[in-house]
Length: 505
Image (tube, rainbow, N blue to C red; front, side, top):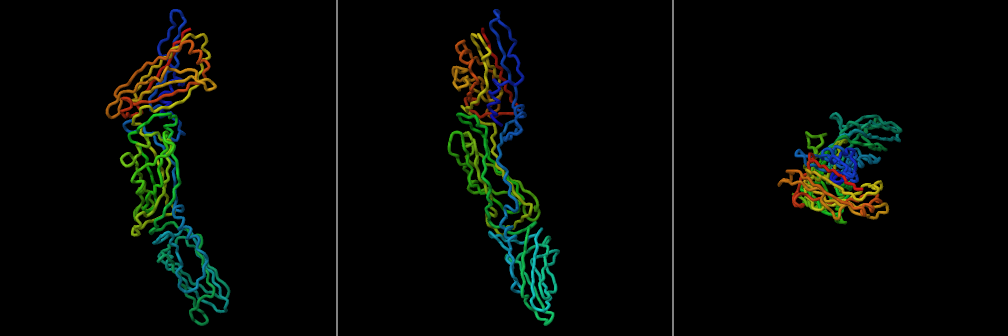
């Protein structure tokens, strides 16, 4: 929404809108030496303006049921997947090395990084590889069992004969469930000699578990900080600002979260800072909720597995200093929001993760056009060419405005040549060309205003501005009652300005 307020309120005074109409029926005077020349007319309401805004613009514009316009600026959508958040679990599962089986009963470590206590895990991928060697002439009947690796209610097991030489077996772990005991998976085997009938230990027994991936797991997943990415929201409302204050009645910053991790999670806000047009240093957003954190909604066992829970938290003037810092001309909002799981360290609260679990976080700043200002100033330029008017003795510009908004506009224009030298000004001093419409105690306009403004130019002044290449426009805005009253800007309100000039030869 580039330069919305500027283009809407006074840029149209001079920029052709392809709907020019005469200000009034124009007549030559009796001598034929004086002409009234229409420059243009612009008439629109705010809804038309909103409908025609560039669709690629980064600003989202909403209209409340009462017609109040809201400007919303959103930060980047930050997404964290199951692998991103629990990378340590996945890394542990996929890095189990080859290890020797030295006893008939072994507790194989099932890593529990960062105080994670897994109740069970369903596998969608993985394989177990065993290698056995027998340097004797004996033959062994080998029976093994993983009592914590279960499929269809039965533990993983097998029986085979091991003769002289070597034996290799690979088991596909897809569809198995790991149910660790004390962070371990227990492996047990027996080997019986067919020659002596005695139980023996296999001379060479190696095992590895590779390429494990889970589809679902339950347990307590520890208190882990998952780092987000710092982001910046640009507020272009004050892009043309030069001076003055604007106070918004109800600005907000909202944290929006969609979460399909079944784990208690809380925000860990490292900072929220606002860079304003008046202060070179960013100002901190202050709130107890920044200190204490904000709880994110999450799906609960057993009925919400696979669901996404949406939640949001709003910083407003009742719980923060947002009205002060967003009322000071915000240009940028800097923020860094992390997430921390199990903030209360309550291991009795068991959670879940699926391979499709993810959460996304987005921050949104909202400025409702309901507020007040006394001297919010902006500037911009428009092209200008007066060189075709020869032998003109005088010119008088006439500006007629009709306004349904509770915002008045004072304007000054400077005629500037190609070298950037100011040749003259539109008025002797900055002048109100639009009067603010009166409002009631709720900021609603109760009647419109009309104002006629004249700007005479004698021959000597005209000679100066013939070399002008553009007009530098300076304007400042004042809401009703000299900026002491907050007003509502509604999508139904209309604004009209007509401009012409009387040319004398």
